[in-house]
Length: 88
Image 1 (cartoon, rainbow, N blue to C red):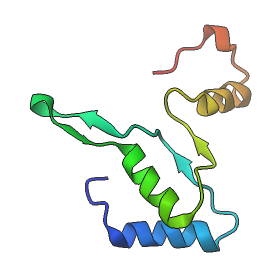
Image 2 (cartoon, helix red, strand yellow; image 1 turned 30 degrees about the horizontal axis):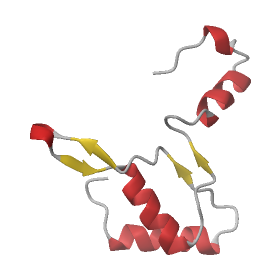
Image 3 (cartoon, helix red, strand yellow; image 1 turned 45 degrees about the vertical axis):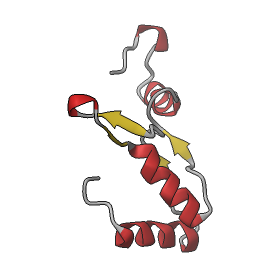
Image 4 (cartoon, rainbow, N blue to C red; image 1 turned 90 degrees about the horizontal axis):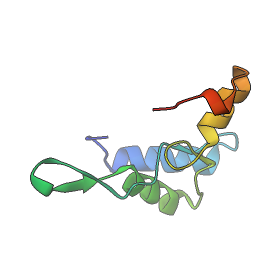
């Protein structure tokens, strides 16, 4: 999110604290990602950590690499053979 700010952090924090059925799903916990000329920018994990710290709740699930949660759900839902499945 190139427009992450205190309002968004506060909103997410309040949802996680005060809405008991609110799920915290993280795409990944990468601290950074490469940009041009060797520059590293904050990754999703930076935002996940901010929200986790502010809300006091860890993610319910992390869907991206190297976690298999999303793959397992897709294989189950669509009755796929995991041995014959590629996820990119």
